[in-house]
Each structure stands twice: as C-alpha cells, then as structure tokens.
Length: 506
Image (cartoon, rainbow, N blue to C red; front, side, top):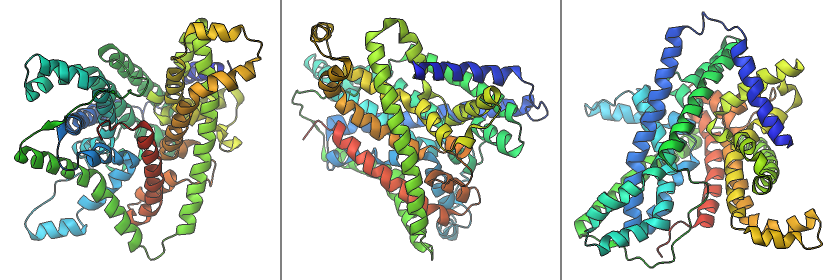
C-alpha cells in the first residue's frame, strides 16, 4: 500500500502542478513546441524502425542458420546494450567530426564523411545502441515457439525461405512491436545522446527549462506533454502487440539448423561481423584509445565515481526489489488492487526526466522544499519508480506458476506469513529476484537525465561526469568514466546472458 499511495500521489500531484500553473509562454512558444514534438516523434520512430531492420534479420539468421560463428554472434550481437546511447553518441561524433584523424585521412582520399549531428544521424546511432532490445526479444520468441512453427510449416511442404517469409515473420509482429515500443521509450528518455547530437527533443527542453531558464513550471508542462505522448505510445503498443512480461522458455525439441550453401554462409558471417564491428568493436576500441591517450588516467577519480554509481544502483535495486515482491504478492492475492498496482508499476515507459521533474515540482508544491535537500533519497525514489516495471513483471511471472490449489493447501497449514514467504514463496521467486536486481542495477547506473536533475550538489556519478565532459566536447576526458561504465555493464550483461541462456542450440 505505501508504494501504491506514493505512485498514485505522484501522478495526481504532477498533473495538477504541470497543467494548472502558468508557464513562460515566451519560452514555450507554439513553434518551439512543434519543433520538440516533431524531433521527438521522428527520432523515436526512426530509431525503432531502423532497430527492427537490424535486429529481426539477425535474430532469424542466428536462430535458423548454421554458419561460422553462429554460437558466438548469438550472444555477442547483444553486447552493445552495455553502451548507453549517450556514450555511443559522443564516440561517433568524435569519429565523424571534421578534425578527427579518420575524417582527415578520408579527406585526403577525396571522401567526405556526412554530417552526423542531425536527426538522421541520431536515429542511426540510437538504432545501433538499442537494437539489442528487439534482437533479444525476437530471439527469445524464436527459441520458444518459432522452432515449432517453423517445423509445422516445413511439414506442409514449404521451403526454408518460404516458411520464414510467410509464417515466421508474421508470427513475430507482436514481439517486434513490443521491442520497438521499448526502443521508443528508451529514445525519448535519452538526454545526453540527443544533446551531443544537437537534436532538441522534449527531454532536452525539460533540462533547458529547468537549468537554463529557471522556469520550473515550464519544465513540468513539457514533462506533462511528454507523459501524455508516452501514454499514447503505451496504448498503441498494447493494442497492436502483445507485451511479453516474462522470459521465453527454451524448447526441448532438437532442431537441425539450416545448412545453406558456402556462399550464403560466408555472406551471413560477414553481415554479422560487420554489424558486430560497428556496434561494439569500434566504440570499444575508440574508448580505449581515448582513455590511454590521456596523460593522467584519473583511475582514482573514476573509481570514486564508480562507487557513487554503485551506491545509487544498490539502493535503487534493493528498494525496487522490496516493493516489487510486495506488489507481486498483492497482485496475486488481492483482485481489488490489481488496477492500482498496474498503474503504480508502469514507470519504465516514463522518461527519467519526466519523473524527476514531477518529483521536484510535486515535492515543492506539497512541502515547500526541494527533494534534493534529502540527499540521494529523491534520486533513489525516482529510479525505483521508473524501474519497478521489470522487477514487478519478472517476480509476478514467477508467481504465476503457483496454482490456486497449492496456495489453498498452504493456507490450511499452521504457519505464520513470514515462514510461508520464506519456505514457500521465496524459492519460487529467487531466480526472478536475482535477474530483477541485476537489471535494475545496470539501468540505474546508466540513467543520466534523472541523475542530473536529482543528484545532491557536488555528488557526481559516472553518467553525470560523462555529460559534464561531453557537453564541452572533451571526448578523451569522457572516455574514462565511459569505459568504467561499459565494463561494469558488460559484466552484468554477461551474467544475464548466462542466466537466460537464450542460445538453445549447442
């Protein structure tokens, strides 16, 4: 109940403050709002479409075809998820800028690189950073039900390509739409990336209104508009696609991968290799080069930033898991609260900048003080509110395997609630809790706009220090904290991949 009250109070107070107070109309002009809306819509949907065009073919190829390196690419193509989009942005801006060594070398060959600081370049970079969301979901779907559908199509006489084109791809649409929705949400939530790429979206507008113009109600109004846009996307994604709330279960069936011709195998290998080089190898190598080129590597400073980020991630994860368990148990037991629970756990689709602005103006409205005066409490609450969705979904899904008759039998036993939880429910939830903790931790340390808005004065994390450097064009300085952030993210991505073990073919 405390979490439900907090979440519902947040939404009500936020909308009252955002839409019932006067704003700076000279700042929020109609032309400016139209520009923010166009950039946000074009960038988010452009990134989602490009991500799907990259992810879906790759997922089908590594699932159904046997080629050199298919086991490696099955998990390696998801590694770019360890790079926050804002890190991707400054890496490729540094590579493509006029004064870079690559640009100078290509100019000597009369090759001029296209400008990347525009909405088209931003869409491509966002797609490169976020396509693993669709790739993993698609591969999970194929590994659970795609094999059975493919075998059924083959038994009816369809060829390999015909079965994939007519049966597999249409069956993937709900999963693709769910993945594209995730890409849209991640894109509109990004701040550092679009700021580096000089694309003004609502998130940039919120930050500029808050810190640049000191117009807090204007920032809240922009956040309100963005929240309405998010709710519209949520509605259409649920209407046109089925949202998956649990991890796919691997099929136990044996499946013989398609043996293509040598030419096709080589073509698939080089396609996967090309994508892997551009989405992981080049960014990782560039970060290492920039980091080693610094005369002062600032290891101590980066370790301190890592500790700060880890503290934030640990606190947010523990708070989220605690309430996630409570909400999942209530959702299973109390039908009367299901709607309120679903509303209170819908924060993942809401950008961190929106939740931050809502907490700042809402807390000031109710208590006439800033929530940042209470240290990292506001930031942890914001992160828990945003990342409650995956924790609740995974834990709730783990409880769905418990039958009603089993629970009724448990109720007849002379045991108190704490013992029942420890000996009966906890074993069912343990794996979901472990996965939820890692997901919330990694997302929390990568979160940038919320951390920038809600961090205490003088409290820096890896993500905020990256923004401080990139906003001044200091790519080499930003490489240090970026490399630390990517390494710890890669560690958790590796554990998650090992845990999920989506690659069903050995």
